[in-house]
Amino acid sequence: MNFIRRHKQLVVALAVAAAVAGMSLASLFVSGGVSPLQDLLGAIVRPFQMLADGLAGGVGGLYGYIYEYDEIRAENDELRLRIAEQEEEIRRLEEAGEENERLRELVGIKEARPEFEFLSADIISRDMSNWARTFTLGAGAREGVRVGDCVLSAEGYLVGVVSACANTWCDVITVTDTDMAAGAVVYRTALTAVAEGNFELMLNGRLGLFYLEPEADLSIGDLVMTSGTGGLLPKDIPIGKVTDVRMEKNGLSAMAEIEPLAQLDRLRVCYIVINYNSGQSGETP
Amino acid sequence: MKRGGAKGRGGPVVKAVLYGFLLFVTLFLQIGPLTVWRVAGVAPLWLPVLAIMVAVREGERYGLFYGLAAGLLCWIILPRGGGFYAVFIMLACMLAGNVTERFLTKTFATTLLWCLAAFAAMDILFFLFFYLLPGRAGFGALWRVALPETVFSVLSAQILYLPVKGISRLCGSERRQGLWKA
Picture (cartoon, rainbow over the protein chains, first blue to last red):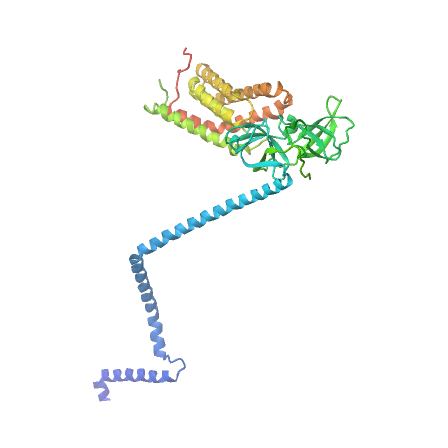
């Protein structure tokens, strides 16, 4: 006991060494090879390791950021450029899609009316007056447009007539405007009349078929087309359908209301007939 | 002779630029969003109303030029009427500016009444010369189009009174610089 008292520190050191050796030996028999001491030390040290690792990563990243700044910036610029190029490509594709759609329409209308020479034009301005139904197209005399040219929708329905023409644009009076007048024929009965714009009807988006015999054979839903009389407009262009038949106020003749087939409010592109061969007749719906 | 904030030598130039910008903005609205803003089947027409407002605030000389500019723009963007809009709006602005300077005070109510009177007169004359006499429309057009157009245009355009008043106050309105001095 005296030896232990005298060499207390040595004994403690030996005891600790023996314990460590014992645990090390024990770890050989534990699956996974991790002793309880390692486990304990690991539990204590792991958080510090993680913190140190994090700091090292951060410092490394900062070092990389400083060291590779120019490279990153160049890469960023390149990526921005690539995004801009791709956005431009998307825009071009969208434009090409619209152009493709328009060309398909043009091919369709050209096949339906081979005797017509068409020019497609965008609507650049819609009517701003409450007193008229007109719009402006982005094609003019430079493209061969003349006053009196007939304007059709993509489906081949009558939209209106060119009323004024500048070099790069033209004004169009639509079929419902008060200045519109065209020889017309009812498809079912071959009854001829004059399709005219009328102020009251214009406000309802319609036009009228005037100067009809009181006993004229006309029914609601009858298709009305241009007759071609007078040579102002080509014949056999669908104008609209009869929605009402009644006697005129004078009591001597009848009139019919016509709803245009062309969707005038939804048009974006029109087709101007800049030339046509009046000797032929195209397909009719 | 200036009244209100004289705002230095550049005042008239700044005022002309600001009023020109306001005219440009109104034109942009006129040919864009206002064409689809319809009440009772009619879209508002702001350009003549703006010109009358400026004339009432600034007097007959300013009204003459501003009315002429607004009228020419109406001539360009509106079908039919020829130079009617240019001549009428110019004369109406001169009259409004002159009478207001001589006999009236420049208040919101004065401006509103002038706008209503001038717009109604313009629509009636337009209807008379371009629709009734040529046989394009009967008197029903007055109730169906002229009346709602006048009321809707003048009332909706009162929002322009704020910038007009603001410019007038900022740059100082002209006083007794009419064509016919008393």
